[in-house]
Length: 231
Image (tube, rainbow, N blue to C red; front, top):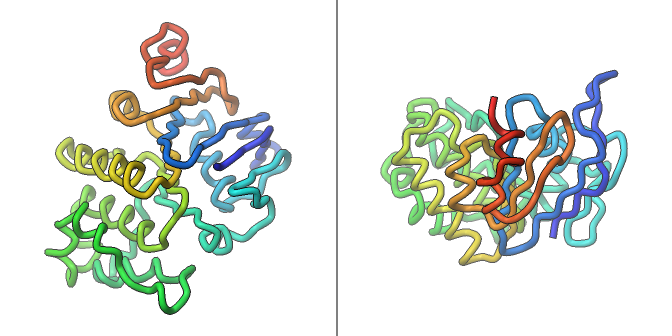
């Protein structure tokens, strides 16, 4: 289980997270929702080590992640799919996937069959450059690259952003499959309400750097949730 306890995060004098506490259990999909600029991506940067926290504690499988470099968090099983995908445009699909080998021992360095069964388009484009793929295909590649690292928790930052509906459905099926078949924890930051409603086991809603509401996916239909999510 991932435990984020009373975490604060600052960018200079500006405070982005204020006493944030969440848990993401193994075998469950945990969704964090909120409007733009409320601290969702900052929370993921704290968890993955992209930005240091200024207070609180982050633990995964009883290991304290505070101060641990991002590559060491990857070695401990934290897989990250960043907002904007951040694939390598001049590398081929195969080479992009192989960048996921970095945290693995030599004997583990292979691309899991699940990557191509979940995203068959990647197999057909294996020699194409990443920059030649559509946005939706690049998103599938970014998820596949994270899968190569054999994560115990998969952290996804707005995977549906700018993606066509047919690929959103493919991504949703892949996330469900990974939860059900591997038992990994999945932490999903989203703005697409219906996507979270269909997938999430538990939901947290953020506003102004704080968790303001939480509960099962059904809480998204309450007046309190709508108040924090509507513009």
